[in-house]
Image (cartoon, rainbow, N blue to C red; front, top):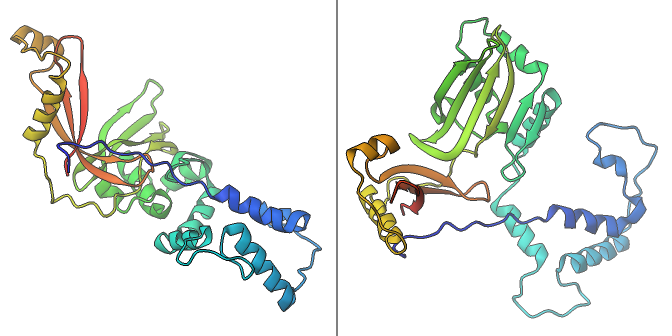
Length: 301
C-alpha cells in the first residue's frame, strides 16, 4: 500500500436503457406500452402463448443480443458473455423487493425527488407530512418527529437507525416562526463527510418539508483497523504541501485573526461517487500562510 492513496471514483454502470431497447427491438410494436405506466389501465389485448419452437427461436435471439453463445455460434471455451456477467451481478446484488414495494407506497403518498446515484430521497413534500407529525400532538420535539419519520420509512431512506445515525447540529426558528432542524449523518459516532438531512416545521409544529443529501448506512466498513493515526495523516499532508509551498508559523495575533493555531486532523467517513462504497479517512486542514487554506483527505487504511 502506498504512503497515502487517492480514493477512486467509479461511475455506476448504466445498463437499464440498453436492456429496454433490446426488448423493444425484439418485440417492436407488440410491446404493450401501458406496462410502462405506474397506474393500472384496462386493455383488451390478450397474451398469445408461444409454441415450443417459437420459444426456442426467441431464446436463440436473446442469446445473440445479450452476447450468450447460441447453438449456431462458436465461441472460445471459457469466455464470459454479457448475459452471464449480468446474471452474476444480479446474484451478487439481488433486487430488494421489500424496499421497492415500500418505495412505491412512499411515492404514492409524498412528492419526492430522488438522488440518481444512490436512490435516496433528497426532497420530500406533501400534506401527509403534516398528518404524520400531527399524531404526536406536541408530545415530541421537532428532532424526534423528524427522526421517527425516517425510522418509519427506513427502507426508503436506507438508514438502519435514524436515532443513532443522525446527530443534531443546528436547530433554529426563522423570522416567520418556522423551525428548521439540521442533522449530520454519522456512523458509529464518526461523521459522514458532506451528508446532512434538514427538516422544516410550520409554527404550529407540522412537518412540511425534508431536504437532504445523505448516503445509505455504510456496510462492510471495519473501523477497528487503522493504518494511519491522526499525527501521521497530518505529517503526510505537511510533507506533500512542503513540496510546493512554504508552511509559515503564525504568531498569536494571526492565530486569533484566522481562528487557526496549527494543522487540524479529524476522522470522517467518505462515500465514493458510486454512492455506496465507504472509506474511513482523515480530513486534514492546513493553512501554510494567511491566504491559502488546504484540505487533505487521506485514507486511514
